[in-house]
Image 1 (cartoon, rainbow, N blue to C red):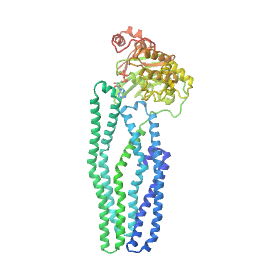
Image 2 (tube, rainbow, N blue to C red):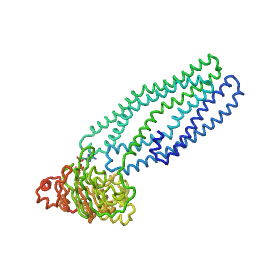
Image 3 (cartoon, rainbow, N blue to C red):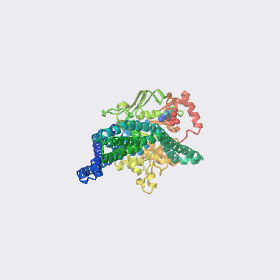
Image 4 (cartoon, protein in one colour):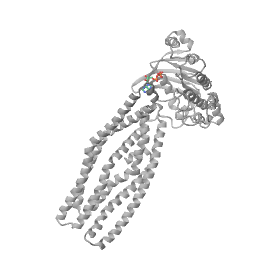
Length: 578
Ligand SMILES: Nc1ncnc2c1ncn2[C@@H]1O[C@H](COP(=O)(O)OP(=O)(O)OP(=O)(O)O)[C@@H](O)[C@H]1O
């Protein structure tokens, strides 16, 4: 486990971990010695020989003092290591998350990561902070005691040693019984926390459709499952825990019986025997503690396993150093095949978006439009074929180089709980105040700021909750304008907006996309009509390509779409260019 901890934490923590382990070992050995010294102290005392006990009492006092110092040193090291470990784990998880393909982030995985970085990190930091010491002591102190027994009376040492393999076997069996149910308990825990978050977040939907009862039923079922899993673990693990405690008591009994048998043979005097028995009882104490701590240690190990697994999840390979790159501002997909899990979604798709032109992607739901945009932004790598941005294979660009080429405006806009200015500045951290204000003006965020009590300093709330959907989108467009990337990937809003917002967003997008390369998942007829190229996707393939007039004249899929959509409510006839 220590080795795994060192691997998860990385090289800088190997030294502190080793030092802490050395401190814990020193403490465990010293504690064992304190137990052992009880024999020479008690032996003369029980015979009434206080003078004989005095030198040993002096030695005992010195060793007790050394034990106390060792305890303090290892506790300080462990506590500090625990705190550093919590920071290091958060950093390592955070750094790795930042490098994982964007497509990795599904809601279920996000839930797991949230659990891992909260309770998981606390479990793991508990190892140096308060678990390692009692567990190491549990094994090392009795070993020192048995070693000392060898010198006092080898038969008692052998009696104690006989029980050790049995204790180890029973401890392992007990741990295995409990571990078998760990996955069930953990899965139930993750499910319950996801349901709680969902229940809280989706109150509006649940109430609107009168399904609070049903929503609650799902949460209730998840919590019942947690309860059931815990009970099942207790039932399955119970025999192991009882057997472990019994084994420890049995080892004490074996040594006592052996001691009495030896005493009857008169090789050991009564005083020594009593001292040895005291030693035996103390010898068993740490073992009982180890059995109790097994569960906490296992939980820490499970959390560590999951962190290890996350940190081993491959990141998208990218060149170690950025090579010089002068983008021609185009986008190209060349024979691209891609699928989620085992299902093919794009099938040998080739598409070119020339620089400074607009391509509109249209097609039925599920035809692969979003997937095309995700591949351009390298959420995933293709199974076959090549995606080129600015004329270069995206796999040959560093994340910084690729991201410098692209601004993405998706439908779900997330704003940080910060001021409007800070949210816009997220587009380019080093932008001057004037540049931020200019981007805000172009995206018509200035109109929003004037209405708010603190203007641009107004905090927008978590996710931008204090603003309307349209207002959030205008801020995200201002962010993209500030970023000033040559290529814009846009998922046009499907939701209806009020006329003011609609017009504001129209002009904000016009400012963003002017003189840029634009790949847009188009929902508005106006956008589609004004595109230089329309690509009709169907089932992961290109069904048709051309301008609006060409495609209407062709009388194919697009023409059918157009006449259907202009009649249906799904496509809105709105004025204003994109
Ligand atoms: N993360 C994912 N995991 C598994 N399957 C996915 C994932 N994302 C999309 N899909 C599936 O891939 C197919 C194409 O989805 P995509 O979102 O690209 O289509 P779309 O044309 O953008 O649809 P829409 O217009 O409804 O947004 C769909 O069948 C969808 O269910």
